[in-house]
Structure formats: C-alpha cells, structure tokens
Image (spheres, rainbow, N blue to C red):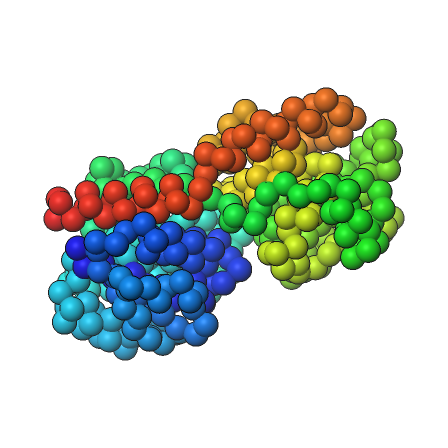
Length: 374
C-alpha cells in the first residue's frame, strides 16, 4: 500500500498534543510497517527518524496556503498513485481538490462544545472548515470514545463505522525517577523545599486552573504538611489573571508559577510531587494525567469527558464544577499516605496500557480496513 502522511504538524505544532501525536505515531509506524511505502510531507526541523528506508520525504511549505493544500499536495498524491492520505492535525489542509482517499485525525471538537474557551480566529476557521473536512474524509481517527461521541453528535450524518478510536500515550521519558533526587532538583530550580501539589497544562478557562487555586486557598491550612501548589505552563491571558488572583489573596509564596518548562524536565516534576491535580472541564484525551500516572504520581482529575477513559479507577475523579468536591478530595488524598501510595501504584499500572506502539498498531490496522472497503 502507498500511504502519504502530512508530517508538517510534528514541526508546526511541536510541544503541543497534536505535534506529540504526529511525531510519535510516525516514528512508530515506520519502525513497525516495512511492507508499505510512505510519502511524508515535511517542513523545518523534522524528526530524523522519519527519514527511513521505507519513506520518501517531500519538503512542503510550513504554511497552510491555498496553493499547497489545493494544488501542490493533491498533484503529488495523484502523480505517485497514493492509496491513502492521512492528515493528523484535525484535517487542516484537506480540500475538495483531494481525489485521494483521506483519513483525518480529529482530536476534539472543543470549538463546538466550548466556543468561549478558544480564540476568535481559530474558532471561526474551525467552525468554517470542519464540516468540509468531515464531508471529504474517507475515514476519521479520534483519540477517545468521548471525542467519537462528540463527532457523531455534531455530524450525525457521518457513518459511525468509519470513525475509529486510537488512544494516545505518554512519551517514554515519562517514568518514575528517584524521588529524593527529583525533590533536590525542584528545590534548586524553583526554590521549593516543601512537599507540593502539581498542575501541568494550559491556562484556557476550560482547564479550570483558577478553580484549583481557589480550592487550595481554602484547604492548605488544614493539610498535615506545608504543601505548596506548583503551576507549570507558559503564562498567557487567563494565566496572568490567575497570578493577579494569587497576589490579591495573599497566596504569594504558596502558589508558585514556573512559567514554561521543557518536556524533558516534566518527569522530574511529576516524580517529585505528592499529588498531580487536573480539574479540566473538557479534554479530547488528556495527556497530563497519563504522564503523571506514568511517573507514579497520585492523580486527582475530572470525572467528565475523556478523562475517565484514561484513568479508570486509578485516580480520584471529581466534579470540576464543584469546588467543594475538589476541596474534599484534596484533603482526602494529601492527608492520607496510604491512599497516595495506593493511587500511585494503580495509576502506574494503568499507564502501561497506553503506548505509542499500540497507537501505531491500531492505526495501521485501520489503514488496512479503510483500504479494503474503499
């Protein structure tokens, strides 16, 4: 089979969930699948693992321009007699000019479900383009059963048997590290000598970081240790408003903002924390809880959307719209050493079910199914 993949998202969206997905999926597919021929559209500093014996690299523009999407790429697909074309970044770039059978990965429909949480420009393009992408897709991959339900809810005309779920995974560097050494690093890097609660992620209102800060502000005096709250992520917009809340409520020194932290450092932060808390209102998949579980950190997260598919019963799941529920479970976990150990072990065991190799194997199986019914 001749398969083409738009690999540009591994560079264009590096550091995001889509970039991580594209990079790991392609690396694993090229290791596993030696009988298929792969044509990869790349730009910028792409992963050197893409340059394999069974792959051909075609350099393309890093911009989603009319010329490249409507003419350049479709012409190459047709000229090379490509059987299937896979677009991993929510189908962005798929136009009606594509004659090749196309599979798209739609990670979530947040602009439809929670439009108030995304930027105006992205919202307008997503709402305009997604119906066309759905219409022109031969098959759809998505990352959770919840996201599949959302696709069927908003695009009920699309055949359910052509939507396939391929869960994500944490990268291999997310694993338990020496807790004492990790704590020493956190103390030297962030000046935190006390035990701490960790949050990793963005500051969109759907992430509910302010809800976490408010819950912490009400319970930290009742904890049996002087816990700090470490919030990791690049501060933008909503993030700046949360720092103002912290300052206005005398939480400086208790709530600590790290700013951007490189992915290579995150396993140290997960391994050193006493609890990872992720009270998000909506996730297409939710990688941070899985990363924390992979590092043997006990997790508190939401009981909504896709997160229960990831955690199972290996985390304390809360109603993120209930600050009382979050406060109760923070106290319950942080003041109970046995519960922390139990959840850490359950989460670590559960995390082993998710690997990029499994994601790649499922994707390859879907390529074959789609090829056989087109």
